[in-house]
Image (cartoon, rainbow, N blue to C red):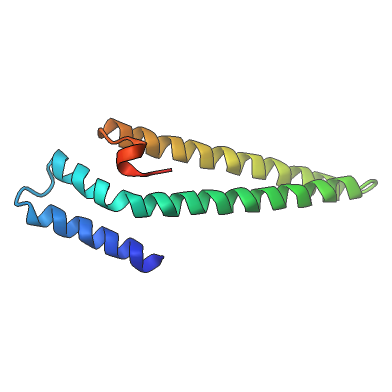
Length: 116
């Protein structure tokens, strides 16, 4: 997967360099359209993995919280873990929204860019 990303970035750089007007908005848009299907698949995979990890950690923290009856230290640690998981999920969601907004402002849509 790492090789695909490097190949896509190199391909985008070559495309931008070969146009003779590298760096124009249209060249950048074309390079992003070339690279984003791979990045989109990576983003989807990372989003799925992050969701799975967050679910497991949240359930583990909930079990710890339920089993820590008389120990306030363990209960506090479990609560902190659950809060951290929720904050992490919010950050992931906001970052996906930010990327989507940037791509939309560049005139790319999810169908043309293939992103998350």
